[in-house]
Length: 172
Image 1 (cartoon, rainbow, N blue to C red):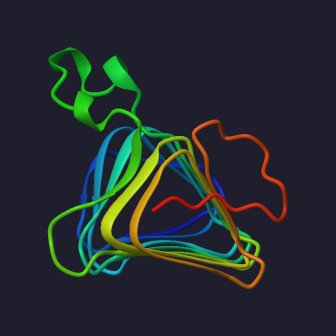
Image 2 (cartoon, one colour):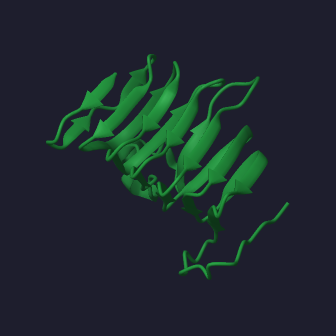
């Protein structure tokens, strides 16, 4: 799905097999599970992605790329508010982004002045996170490979405190 417009647009939960491209305007994902296939999810230019009570699942071989002046703000599901009264999705409480399936994991790239800020965990056990000049913040990060270069800033901190410009918290 190609998304280019100046007015905010809300996406419905579901499967997006061709991926999502946001280059201008605001794209919102609310209340549900979003499965992203194809080339993945790309936020570029002056685009902005906002999620609220949403779990974003990225298919193997896909990617999440945030570059240019783009911003992605992910708010994962929180406890009882996610999945209604059934509680079927409570296990995903506190996770904003997850890889699905097996095989080559997805790649997340945060390039240039772009920002990826997540209030929930990013869980890509077979995936890779590259921060090249951009900024990535999340309370918990699970990746197979991590690359921070070109003045990139990574903050994986449950307290989400303001980072010192030379501080990286890495735990294996």
